Length: 114
Length: 112
Image (cartoon, rainbow over the protein chains, first blue to last red):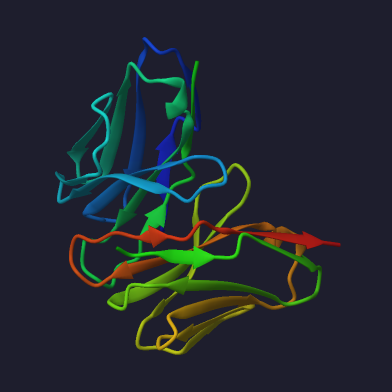
């Protein structure tokens, strides 16, 4: 099983709303990632969690707040977003941060900010 | 910093072979990956190759790596309309906390 599950698949939110994106994997992976992807562009790294601790924050605005409640779950809390934040948000996981381990992606959550 | 370059578009006829090319700059890259993204979907890992290998074959997919020229290619034999998608090349260096560096993606269009 190489499945990374993301919910919701689609989300429309207003600029004053608070919402969350969720990601789950049951592969025993200890590294989890959030990526943002705009149309026809490659994914851009946002956050990396390693063993449930935030290890990389790629200078992401504070209106995006990640959370890793346990080794299987990764959330992305959204608050006061802007229309330009509309994108596909991809979660990924990997066994750990060792050099040989493959990164598996979820299907993504399509976010539209109105 | 690392840089990964790909041609942006490739059009082939069904049944032909497709070759998608990628170049990278980071000589410390240890793993190189090909991901497929269909419209409206996430990234699907197709295959990967370790930097000490020259070639890897997996059914219709053949990956060739020229480490000297830092050139990676993905060949899809007997291309089908279902292969139409964006293909991303990605590289990862060997050190612990590094992540993937993606190319801009190659859109493959397969016509009947």
